[in-house]
Length: 82
Ligand SMILES: [Zn+2]
Figure (tube, helix red, strand yellow):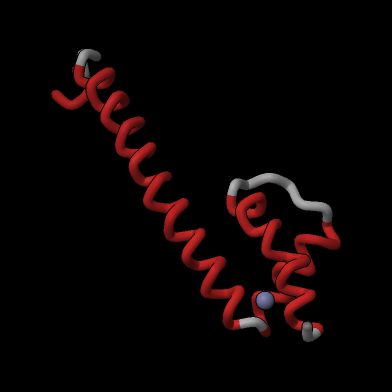
């Protein structure tokens, strides 16, 4: 097992936590960022996780926007008459 392999195993579990917006311990956050700058494999893994998260987030946002729009449309907007 190479040093890189060991580093990969060390940081990969943190990817999803990091993407979930969970506060990582500072040393771990630094480690993850640093690792991503020099490890293309983990960068790809991270991007894939990020993409998955973003599509999930987009779905959730659509939901929120939808309910916001419908609640706004029930409000009378008289200010537009000026
Ligand atoms: Zn790696």
